Image (cartoon, rainbow, N blue to C red; front, side, top):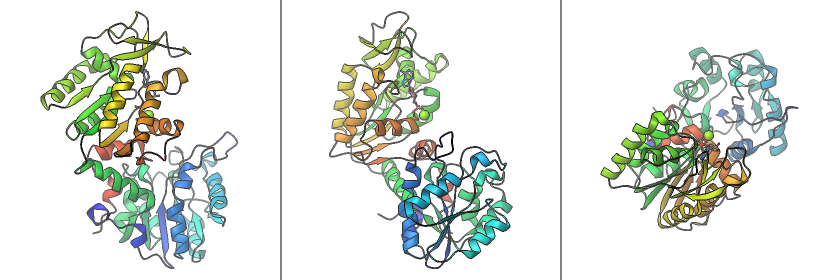
Length: 399
Ligand code: ADP
Ligand code: MG
């Protein structure tokens, strides 16, 4: 399927013998002794990097790592990433001493076809996050072709995501970015119905724009997590000591009224798992009208799991964001694991997961490769499914 807005896929770009700047997301977690503790984001970019190597491009990778706040801080060096990438592709990866400057220019100038360089952490210079024109020009001077494969930062207008593609004419999306655009765009188009959204997580305040946007597209919304508490309280339920956003009760009430006017189905928990507090190691299932004083709702209950499972089974398009409970703890992970498995077991539906903790939950359930798509971008995927324009994607449109 071609990408929207005439955006070109990296495989359609003229890269042979060309210097290709690739914005990747190498913002990986490091151990205390500065080793890569999870290389999933590096592995994810391998299809783009291998493609460019095979096509004889001169590859200049660039990324941020952590928040060095515009200063050169050795603890945020991409050195461990360069080492891991070199091992994965079984060839040298030359790391520059700074993202731009004489050293970087020389490394890029010396590249031969099929060789790989990595610019040092882009956020060592304040110009990256400020989308400074001079910084963008310096980066653009290292390339003939620009590729963005960092979907997770596509919602940020930085020099490497927006400034550079504004200057470079030959540009396009890498394999990671292209898949994100292709699948998430399907959720904004003519989907197979019923379309169900499953939304949970910590706060109504984090997600109300997402809920509002989803409401206009879906047939039903199943709500779980701490977010459900606020909706249940808005309906007059007694949530005892559960996490509730008291100041969001009118927002929740308003949302439920809009949903009913639009004749959309909203599923809320009919039972929950309660405990004394977040440190508890076991919980008890109770009906939503029977939460004991002093207890907290920390997961959806078995009857609710059954209802949500059935709604997922009946749907033909499902978007899931936000855990159903405190899934980090085994005692309160059942609801989240059940949703993950119900999505994974679906043989007929488009099943998409967005959000950092939700992606972690799907990985924990061991089913990341059994759903249609797990988005690599937390905030970026939520902005995308709201139909918002992501500056890093807009910047890839041909002029
Ligand atoms: P995502 O990153 O997928 O968008 P969020 O960040 O919104 O998800 O929410 C994830 C967090 O919500 C998890 O840390 C989880 O423990 C917490 N959470 C879910 N349900 C509850 C609950 N009932 N009470 C307290 N915290 C909860
Ligand atoms: Mg989160």
